[in-house]
Amino acid sequence: AQTVTQSQPEMSVQEAETVTLSCTYDTSESDYYLFWYKQPPSRQMILVIRQEAYKQQNATENRFSVNFQKAAKSFSLKISDSQLGDAAMYFCTLYNNNDMRFGAGTRLTVKP
Amino acid sequence: DAGITQSPRHKVTETGTPVTLRCHQTENHRYMYWYRQDPGHGLRLIHYSYGVKDTDKGEVSDGYSVSRSKTEDFLLTLESATSSQTSVYFCAISDPGLAGASYEQYFGPGTRLTVT
Image (cartoon, rainbow over the protein chains, first blue to last red):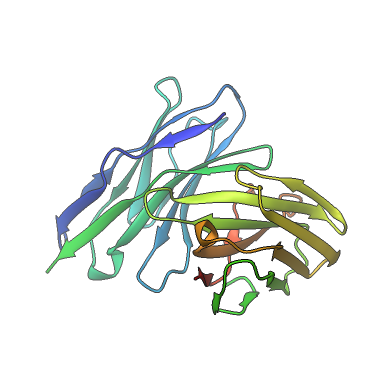
């Protein structure tokens, strides 16, 4: 079975600073996809960034970027220039063959 | 935002009663999913559908059934609700066959179900 582990239940960052959220995963597959989703207090699940395992280049989306280390099965999310609106639960997610596994989440607090 | 709605948004029911949650999409996506979200577990897949009348089980399918008679609708049924099924339920859609898609899923707003 595929598993996703987020070892940081809570993180905090000062507004305008940079923060990195950690994620490790386990799968026996070589072809899979990784995502970070954000869930603000509204409860809506919002896609932040995606990474195809066959691509070596790390994905970036504006202030969000990932550090994908396939051999180490690590997929961390870096948020630059943090904003108050970034405060949310962040879920690391692994997808393969209709099996989507979520980590338990990291709650990010942004301090003004 | 993807056109996904869930109904009802909130429901309180008694143990032993049947409950049906509805997910409706306007995106014509092929795949639809039902998840439950509980504290400390992230989201867990209950059932999914890969086409009309084509469904399969997910990680936590016991006590749940699904049906999909139309592309746009995916129903989740709790035949006899139990307190352990108190949760927030999310529907999601995806269509990896679309150009530029890479299996990401888009989620509905969620339904909070309380079984007393």
